[in-house]
Image 1 (spheres, rainbow, N blue to C red):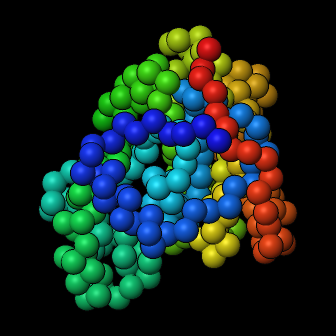
Image 2 (tube, rainbow, N blue to C red; image 1 turned 90 degrees about the vertical axis):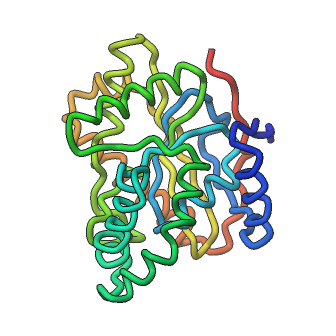
Length: 249
């Protein structure tokens, strides 16, 4: 397996080295063969566990997409944690959500800054997200995007994918002519396993004749299928292929 080139600040790399002592490396079920850099990788959240595991053990350099509130001021971050994340996604009571938000807010600031998360927006500022993402792909840096609708919590069987990843990939293709690859991934915290599907190119998606929402739904259905086949029906799953990567030509 090729080694990941570290592009994060030394202090954050040190923090990650400490966390690795308590977080086991996941099993990889790799159906994709070589993983190509300068690509888009989709995954479920598995609550906060997914982003942490990818940050610790995914073998390529990447940047996440993440909601702008968590990349903003302390007040924005606290409000998001206290009124959306803990009560709606994790289903804690309102008083407990406020307590937890107060406790974790300073640490979340450190992690989001260390992970160099690209903020996403529900309005016209999304163009900033696309511009930054475009620049990262041009440098051969990958994007990891969590497209699942988690408004009512996190589910093992994914219910809905948002289509922002496809909208961005299509725009990137029109601006550069580059046939960017999109990989579908699923992480199970319980089984500590990641399954990676074969990639699909943006040209294939654009020529399918499907709408953005239909394409997002296909990605959602496909990864549910693979999770069921390779993780939940095989609790003793083992590695399936080496996790390697190659430079984008």
